[in-house]
Length: 217
Image 1: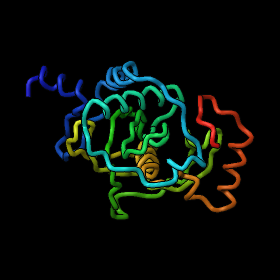
Image 2: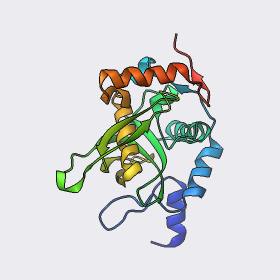
Image 3: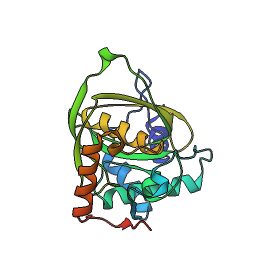
Image 4: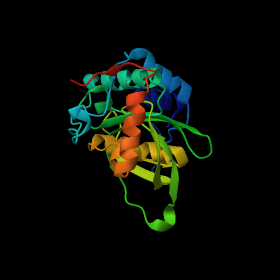
């Protein structure tokens, strides 16, 4: 494909793929993230207790201007909150879509969008558990250790509706799993023990968010 055509596709949110069929989401990250963010408007973040965070979201079925505007707003909101990933229900929208701007175990930056994500079950020889600290914009100021696989593969669609496969290692693998969980109504604190969950909620209650949040009624 000619370079001009490739550039036009990337401007429209269509990423190239490698020889294994995974999206190449590590190229032109600064340019692509800025383009999304500058078109968007930052929205406040929903926090634990808001019903939209605790139920499975609706599938994305319309891949048009409304979805594109939502994605732009999500990137803007993610930057305001200084996050590395953001699910639509974290800004109150009941749709299965998340965005990410996250580094992997080698420090390589990845930027992209996944609609209708499905986390793939991988054989044990392709992954090992990484017991590291995890936080969430929807549980502000709280952190807890949580073991997750250090390699993850998510399938879904891009914002144009094209099928995609995304893979991540290290912190990016954690991000892919964390954001996919969100869209099925699960927060990371739901994977903690009762004592650890209680401690995370205590941290949240005692802290002050550094970004705008939606107060629960």
